[in-house]
Length: 179
Ligand SMILES: [Zn+2]
Image 1 (cartoon, rainbow, N blue to C red):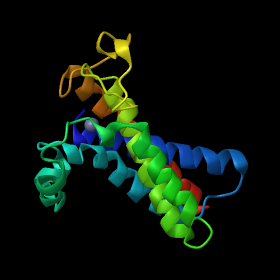
Image 2: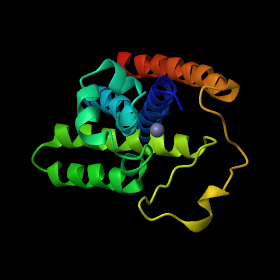
Image 3: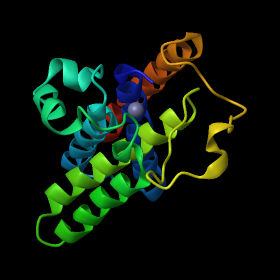
């Protein structure tokens, strides 16, 4: 999946979830928390592709240097695309929760962005080994009933749909914080 689709979809999903939480629990999530989640989930959604030379993150930011030094010889869709990576960020977030709450929220947001990224990549025509380096035997043959080609028609359609969801979520957030 392309970086922009990861970004738009994870922002749409996370903001919708935060809005839903505010609306169903009748306690508005503080704006500062929502803002941190919005920013960190977006960042997290791009982070796994730091192992790919062609990712947006590596082409346009300082992460390109990082890639050259740490990831150039690493398999694309390796460790950064595993649940280990998600658990690592969640664990760090837990450790920081009591003393550095906002940083913990930020790292938790990153873990959610990574998780959404991995799930989305899992539906692409190329597989993701979520327990890498432990590879389950049949994953090569595994095909979901729904899958898409990176940059193909299906992905382009999802990109548009997620934009619609994101605009709706932004509008709802605006209404929530205005009241
Ligand atoms: Zn990826």
